[in-house]
Amino acid sequence: MSNEGKTEELVRAWEFTKDLWQLIKKYYTPDPDPDGTYWHDLIEDSSQLGAKYDNDRLAQKLILAFLDYIEEKEKNNEQSTTEKTPEGAEAARPEGAA
Image (cartoon, rainbow, N blue to C red; front, top):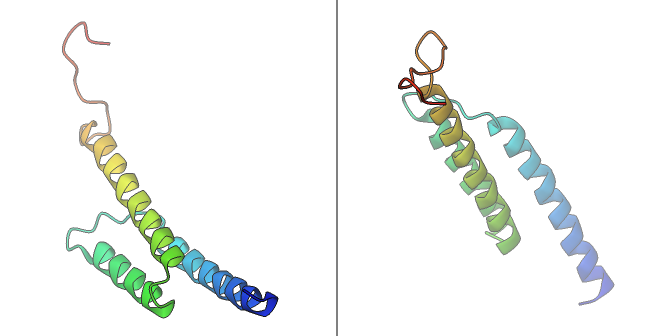
């Protein structure tokens, strides 16, 4: 690949990185909306971002990594909220449990 080709590839990667950053800023904190619009919008925006970069392999991997991260983050948030009572106190434990 010529230096010119590498430069074009790097410019495209830089443009993708900026666009990915905008996606991350917008969806970084999972929103536990009951109607599912958060996930619908995140997936829609992610698909559009991938399509914008012709579903480039690097773009796909980074977008999927972000989606996996958000899914894990949401599951961890759900777990921590189910371990507490509505008053915010820790769930009751059996006597003698640490």
